[in-house]
Length: 228
Image 1 (cartoon, one colour):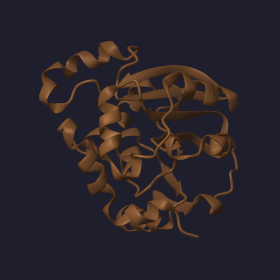
Image 2 (cartoon, helix red, strand yellow):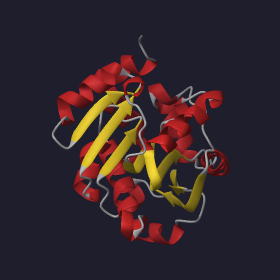
Image 3 (cartoon, helix red, strand yellow):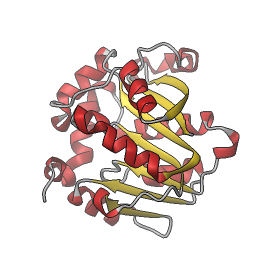
Image 4 (cartoon, one colour):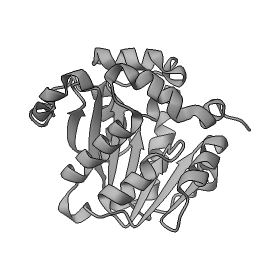
């Protein structure tokens, strides 16, 4: 069975960078920024997770960063696109990371942290709860879910998504919709933060971003929550 993202697997990073070019940054800038922020806000008890689920891992960009920045002991990436998984394995497979199809992954409540970035806006709304249920069943009791999504309240986000081939038909989630989705899946929300306010041309102002985490206009948002 093929998936729409199979068509983008070989050139995924280039297609994403084409969309992001208006910001003056590439995909790694944003990936590092997300995970560095996550490292700052994780509860102390979850600061160095032994096992991390990278849900919707795509070509595996986040997996080595979760190891490098969070000190994750093991990262398991899951995705629906077999061709994306093939790219991820060729680039990042190691003793500390592996990549599986969602269908081959059986949730067993054995992950300390689940990371999900920019995935759910590609999932048809009626199927989103199934994804959240898979994540919830994968986490141990008290495990942390880091849910990152693109913020449609940010005009720059809408512009970038319109320029990105695989994002043009995405159905975005507003911050309240994202919070509602995780709450309905049974997660306890710990905080909501907003990230990435200034493009590279305005990078002199990026020192202000830490003051604006609760202003709902960042290009992305994080809903950090806990499994009960």
